[in-house]
Image (cartoon, rainbow over all chains, first blue to last red; front, top):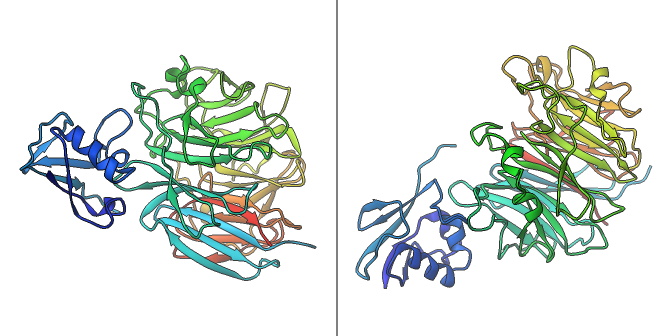
Length: 87
Length: 373
């Protein structure tokens, strides 16, 4: 299982948990697993064309990635970061 | 004089608020905020079922969504399939902007308009939404929607979905930076309906589409009559005529006929209200001269009367957005508008006098009303 750190705007989906676990060999698979566990989660972070929402960033082991095809190992850590924005 | 208690549903950039008034509309209590921190573009009670309310929501960071209450607003659940374009489409939904309940004969039907331009339909009281292929995949849609980089700051949107109460297959849709379009087959095909409307910001004369309606309304008792407040004036059309008439020409010249919302009298097709804004030079989009006023026509646009009693006399630079002005069904009709500076103004006598019933709210996006009791 991969650890996924979830920003506060998504806590309403994860039962207020900021850290959850998911299975999958890619970010895409991780998000599909998260959507099974927390229905509605994926659409809030990825649009219907499979694009990461513009105000979110994904990190795998501290390295930013912009593709959902990014490979993920079980020991990896994924961070989803909500961009800092004003007003 | 008779009225029932009125509930006002206020969508703001930071959540939704519900104001409940007594029958005299002199006392108000507030509930909320619901969805604190989320942009609520539109929160709409179902006129067919007092328990159903839908809310179009967008948190700052996350994708757009839609929430529904089946118990009068006590609890909310997210739509299990929110509006989304089909995979492979050139666009993705950025915001659900407007919601329209279907006709009484179709109890579960709702329509949603999005930014960028898109139309979606639900038949299960807003739980699941299907893309209206006849518009969203129309071969001319890329031309209708215009340049992706152009349009209003908050994205070109679908702001008006107007149903003909006589025929569930007859719809009109209003798009910013797009125009008014009509379907006579339940949304399977659409045609522009913009003849007579100015589009003086475009390089071509009398274009078929590309206009900028701000708000389109149909009169429920005279459904051949539509009004629109446009970027380029106030218009009326009486079908089957296919040409809009610019009824804003009879507004005072120093005020002009630019604004965002237009509100119709529920019982009188000749009466409509607008909230003029300054559309000169760089388009301040505020009350002309800092002196806010509503204007009413009682004769379908032949003449207009200023209604500013109770409103600030000067230095009040109010902006009222296209969905932020509404009427109730009382006698006399109650009117309500919300400002981007977070004030909620009400009149219980058809605009003859105004009072501020709430202040310090977030930027108001929309107002809807429902009679209760």
